[in-house]
Picture 1 (tube, rainbow, N blue to C red):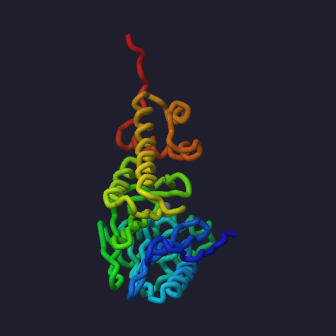
Picture 2 (cartoon, rainbow, N blue to C red):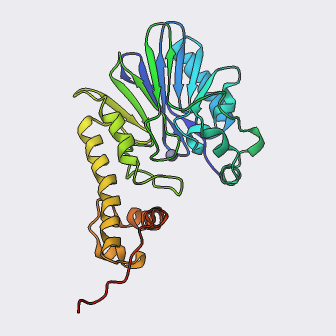
Picture 3 (cartoon, protein in one colour):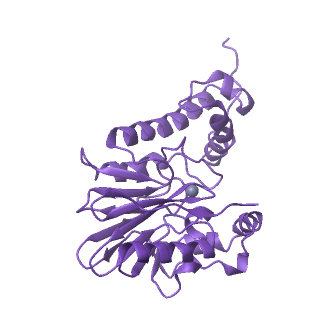
Length: 279
Ligand SMILES: [Zn+2]
């Protein structure tokens, strides 16, 4: 039985808060302005989304006037239906993912009725600005990475960026079959380009990160892809790659990523070739 629960909102900086929702330990962001608040990510079910909305409004004392799903994954977007009547924002790729058989499978495994899920009502390709009656929040898609539709929420006056799962501090980033390994570091570069020394990065899962931690994770993701590319260039097959390579992540993570990386490189025409002995 999946346990759904929502932790308390805790301050990140002045007027920016985060709460943790289970079952996926996902960070739920809250940005509070004088006339309304923005919720970043929605939890894993419509009921959890509704509970989140009620908790946010009770805590902030102003209505939820906007919601962002940072990407389509269940722990971020399955709560959208709990925000009926509120503009809900996401990248333009999100609705089709939420209608995809893969989303149905996840919903069923969680005991969430697939038909109860809602799509975001305001989708966009690049950027949107949310006005909370003072503080402004910028929603930006920096390109493909963890998914093809990751959106970050930038709160300039607070020096906080909600990064979704482009960054994670609870463990290695989540490399799923819908990620884009080669492009992922460039999406993180979009974030890094806005980061000052004291900017606080709130990842999709885990404690807030600083600039250095984000740079390091960007380098690790890039290094993982680069290592696979190098091994393929040397003719190393997928089944031998783990033993042959040097890796920035633990064995379980690397073994999960290898088939994805080999497939992504094969799609670009890069495959291991048998190296003929030199005559
Ligand atoms: Zn995710």
